Length: 214
Ligand code: G3P
Image (cartoon, rainbow, N blue to C red; front, side, top):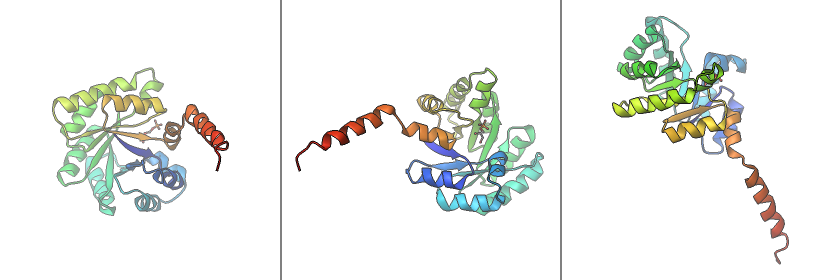
C-alpha cells in the first residue's frame, strides 16, 4: 500500500518524509488555505521534498475551465496529479485530461458507483472520503470494500486512494481490503508509529543493558 500525506504543511511533510514512508502528497483548497502561503509556493516546496504523486485541485466547476486549469497544473511538474471534483463536468474533464496524458485524481467520491464512473472516465485515482461518511452514520469502509472489488473484477488501472482518514484503524482496514493508497493526516501517521509496548520494551532493554559488564 502506498502512503500519502494529506496536508499542505511543508514542515509536517518534511518530518514524515525523513522516516522514509511517504510515497506522495494530497492537498485540497482548504489545506492550502491553512498554510497562509501562495499556492505556487506551497506546490514548489512540496515538490522539492517528495518525489512522488502530488495532488493539487482545480477550483473551476465547468469542464472546459477544469481542463485548462488542469493542464496548467500538470505543466508545473511531471509528478503533479490533477484533482477534479466528482461531478458531471468533472467526469468530462477527467476523460479529456486523461487522454492527454494528465493524471487525474477524482475527489469528493462518496459511493462505489461514483468510483466506477471515474474509472470509466480514465481517472488515475479515485478519492473516497471515508471519514465524512462515518461522520454522517454511513460506514465509509464498506464503500472502500466495494470499490476495491469493482476495480479488481474489471481490471481497472484506476487506484483507490482512501481519503478523509481519521485514525490508524482506517488505514489498517483499508490495507486489509487491498486499497492501493491511503492519504493520511500527519497526526495519523505519527499515531501509526507508536505502540506503548514498544516504548516499554525499549525502556526495559536500555535499563537491563546498564547491568551488563563492560
Ligand atoms: O484531501 C481530502 C480529504 O482527505 C479531506 O479529509 O478530514 O477534510 O474530511 P477531511
